[in-house]
Amino acid sequence: MYVPKGLGKGFAVPLLGTVMIVSGANAALVSFSKVITNNTLTEQVFELSKEWTLTDSLGNTGGSGSLAIVLTDIRGGGAYLKAAGTSPIYTSFINGTQVSLLNSGLLNVAPYGQTSLSKSYNFTNYNVSGNINQIIHTQLKFILSAGDQAVISSTFEVVSFVPTPGALAFIGIACGVGLRGRRRN
Image (cartoon, rainbow, N blue to C red; front, side):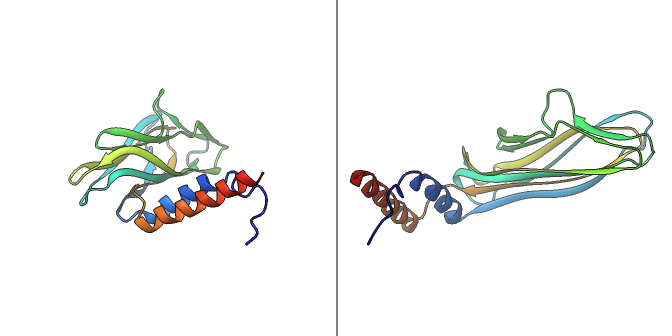
C-alpha cells in the first residue's frame, strides 16, 4: 500500500479528536430558549440559568456549547444587548467549576430593526470530572435596552471523554501510519 508522502504530519491529532467525539458513551445536555422583553423605561440586567443533575458518572468530561441571540427594537429608538460589566454573556459549569464561556460584545440595532448573533465552541476536553448527582448548568447574564426584546437560545453538552477500546486501536493504527510516513522522509 502506498502512503502519500507527509500524510502522517498533522493527521493523528485531528483523528484523535474525532475519535474522542464519536466514542462518548454517556452524555448530558442543558438547552433552553427564552424570549426576554424589557418593559421598563431603563436598561435592565437579566440573569438566566438552567441546570441538570447528572444521572450517570461521566468521569473526565468534554463537550461543546452554543449561544444564539435575536435582538429586536420594539420602541423605535434603536436597541442594544451587551455584557453586564466584565461578566461573559454565556458561562457553563460542571459542579461549580467554570468550563467555558462565550461573549458577544455589543449588539446594536437601528430603529425598528432586528439583528442576530450565533456563537459556538467546538468539542473540547474540559478536564473536569462529572460524577453522579453533580450539577451541570449554564448561566446567561446581559443588559438589554429599555422597551426592547431579545430571544436567547443556548446549549451546553457534556460527554464522557474516554475513548472506547476500538477507538484506542484506531488511534494506534493512525499514529503508526503517521510515524511510518515520517521515517521514510
